[in-house]
Amino acid sequence: MEEVVGRLRTDQMGALVTFIGVVRSESKGRPVKRIEIQVYPEMARRQLEAIRSEALEKFGVDDIAIVHRYGTLEASDNIMMIVVGAAHRAEAFDACRYVIDNIKRRVPIWKKEITPDGDFWVEEGEL
Image 1 (cartoon, helix red, strand yellow):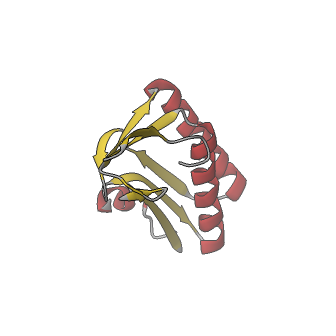
Image 2: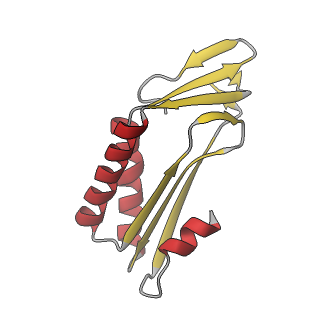
């Protein structure tokens, strides 16, 4: 995480907004042991870059880094990190929310929760 922030940071930025998504240990009242994240890598990379470019233009922020893991992750593992650097905090927060919301809507990523009661795919809108 420090490495991503360090690469993005400049002395021109007055704000660095960071979002870290974490694997929850409970979902819908069920304990979650781990999750499996599947992705169509080529399409996901294109969508992530498109979302990044849109946010840079729309909010006038200086830079954005997006990291999203896939594979098998344990409860409390980090899934995603978004860092937005900008001159001012309002634009950085707005851009970060835009990126998160659009990742959930547009990027081909599927999550399966592994619980003691069985495996459950996370439906769209629940990510």
